Image (tube, rainbow, N blue to C red):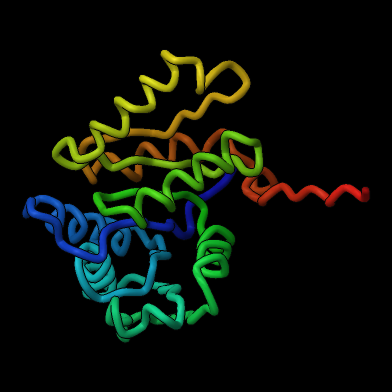
Length: 201
């Protein structure tokens, strides 16, 4: 059985148009801090990224920000984090976020958030890892994506043997209970990324 020590949160570097998005990021940050679970995230101080990181630190929690060098100025690197890792590129950033997290949560966000979420879903679908992946569907934000997944299943592009089953919740208060339930079925070994040796031609 696995335990939740740190959760990677993917979310927008902007606040979005719905005040519930920032409010939910702040609430979840407080929940993480009060539950003694570390935040692994993209290292910025603006938008939802800044809101969740500020909330974690304000309530005595631990933040690890992982940010590529070229984004330090654009996303205004969060200097209150207990740990900041500056990477050479996005690939290194995502690899370190994966390695340090026990589970993944997607709050509302844009293309970058979507890309990070879908990459984790793809790795899980291909059997590379079994870390839980959760979609926080705040105020129905991810409804179109969930509908697209249903459409892909109906069109048999998500089929038997290639199933993908992210956990979906509507309220941030439901995130930790859902992840804790999901991690009961995952061993520490199953959280490691499965690697395959390249074939020799």
